[in-house]
Length: 275
Image (tube, rainbow, N blue to C red; front, side, top):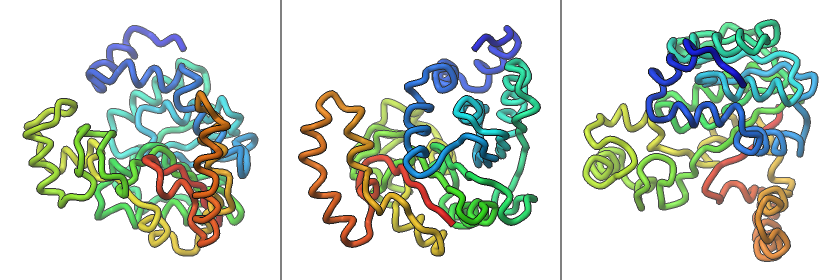
């Protein structure tokens, strides 16, 4: 997508070293779109849907959802700088009639009516929310979902895995108390700056989540992944899909017997719930 020099300058100023990654999220069909669209298509579709994108950032995921066929996407985001940039991008792409970006200081109290949206998405965002606010924000997203709609949680690091590949690149981080994790990040990480506060490391995504936490936050929701199919979805994009499936399918069958999706034990939580 072509952006004006002013928008690119704003993107570089806001995102710093991650500005090119932000462009790739929008422009590379194998980055966000392939994962998000194939995940949703297992249980429903973006086509014709009204979508609420919670934690919409600089707008890449919302714009990709329009490519996937969404009728309208509403993005809510607590960082006003990101909202301004997302609006600029939407204007330059000529889609302001199909997408809106709203600044909100409290995503646990949204102004939308109950059941307003066909899909509610948390795309690579839960790990960036303060752990004390996650339960309320997940519950609010579920409130905004219409009966039969889909709540999508995508690319959230799984705290069951004892390695933090998302933020610090260090082992044991997900299993340690936050104060110790932050101390290790300051001392040993070569990925994130070492002088940050714990709040800043949390905003960077140092605290992932778990399937158990999410199901407790939205106890009345039904996880569709527990019906099976996670292994096939993950393996189809591997270089040796048949071997991958043969090794992992028995594990999925056992987990599904107990009502647990295979994606509950993978490094990234990619989950679909319905109301």
